Amino acid sequence: MGDVFVLAEHRRGELREVTLEMLGKGRELAGRLGGHLKAVLLGHNVDAFARELASQAHEVLVVEDKRLENFNSELYQKVLASLLAERKPTLTLIGHTACGMDLAPSLAAELNLPLATDCIGFEFEDDRLLVIRERYLGKLQSKVSFKDSPQYMATVRQAAFPVKELEPLSGQIVAVESPLAEEARRKKFIEYVEAAVGEVDITQAEIIVAVGRGIKEKENLEIVEKLAQAVGGVLAGSRPVIDAGWLPPDRQVGQSGKTVRPRLYIAVGISGSSQHLAGMKNSDIIVAINKDPHAPIFNVATYGIVDDLFKVVPALTEQLSGSYSGQG
Amino acid sequence: MDTVVCVKHVPETAEADLVIRSDGRGIEEKNLTFDINEADNYALEEALLWKEKYGGSITVITVGPEDANMTVRMCIAKGADRAIRLDDPRFEASDSYAIAKILHAALKDMKFDVVLTGIQASDDGHGQAGPILAQMLGLPHAAYVIKTEVLEEGRRVRVHRELEGGLHEVVEIELPAVLTIQTGINEPRYASILGIRKATKKEIELAGMEALGLKEDEVGEAGSKTRLEKLFPPPVGERAQILTGTPQETSAQLIGLLKDKGVI
Image (tube, rainbow over all chains, first blue to last red; front, side):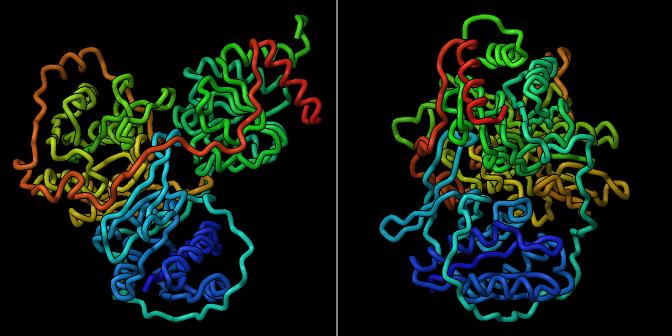
């Protein structure tokens, strides 16, 4: 008992990074719970993944089935409901991803398990497991406890637990018979569709000026465009600006958009949701201009200006353009 | 197409100063403005677009206090036909599971083709209620939906789910179903003055615990599977070097620093 299961997430022939992140954290939690760490791998022709996972888990449970080639929450739920009910791990970790979140809530509800989503920390108090998760778009964090249960489930935020070099394990690979008797009935995977390629590839830019919700109106984008020109950078945006249709989708920085790593990233009116930070926090130098001193963007920025962007951006543009003649 | 849209009345916290309540388990709400949860607003718009195209009705449902009437009235003003508010003092401190249970009690005997809701609420960010509701109703679901297309006269729907890195996954799903809608799927409309005027006269149906046939241990903290123990400010990491002064001064300092680093 005390086992920790980690659901391996893979897509189009690649094991997704969050899987290894969960295995790292999972190993520590399994140690604390006095159990084993087991990777759970569902798929078709996934032997290579199984071998890779075996170096990071005490056991790899593999459910091989042609019908599991692509993620399908209906089929995944069927397989996992049967597996978890039978093997009863104390804790099951699933990625807080578009696939994990299509699966975990309904799976937990079917099994009547407590579920905490988007977890960024795990703690024990008197042997009780608690999780840390954000609220209010990252402005506060919360400590959450579970109702007593023999099994718990959590979805784990991507990149919350960076992969560390751990001593390799030599987990046993165990084939588990697929409980699926038929094709998915109500939900069918059709295909993947790539994002449209735009005229500018922001992932190649050395300098990015990104604009967020703080810009308020589409008409105001002009001042940020001018800054981008003055500094020799390309214009990008955070989700709210793309959602509003003010910039095309290929300019979106963040988890569901592009991951960028320019030499200079200037964030204008961006508060810094975790999804946005995931897409830019590895930039060499980050400048944040935001009037809210508590905005999470200041936690990753190199330099910050806590002020009204409508005053700072024009001043910055003017000075960069060399037309400035006042006293600095 | 008869659609149910589940909406939540949430505080706008993006630019607000948040104060943790003295019991540590919530925030002071008196100085905050509230509005429809952003993703739910996109879900409502999707329902309105379907109604324009295929006919049918829209029922808006919320679990929330009297103040939430403001949010459901705005949905009526935009074109929803019916509004239901589920409220009871015993619903206080319900987690996603208990909220789904309450919604389930209201929807289980209702006829509809699809339930839409936002992928998550901007306050708690759980992203659970929609798919749990689907499970309780015995319906299929798709989460993170960023495009919809109704097929075969409403027997099926083809949706794009937004994965990471700009990739979409296309799935077909049988109706009735529950879809959780991602922001950016459409352009939410504003209510017309006429619509707002009409909405003020509209009756909002109200149901509490007994009316929904729920028991005390199914709602609130007793019916929840998780409990928020305490809120706290995020740990302060390696914060930015904050530049101070007038906009001219901070700009000059910044340019100097960036030149020193050789990035401009």
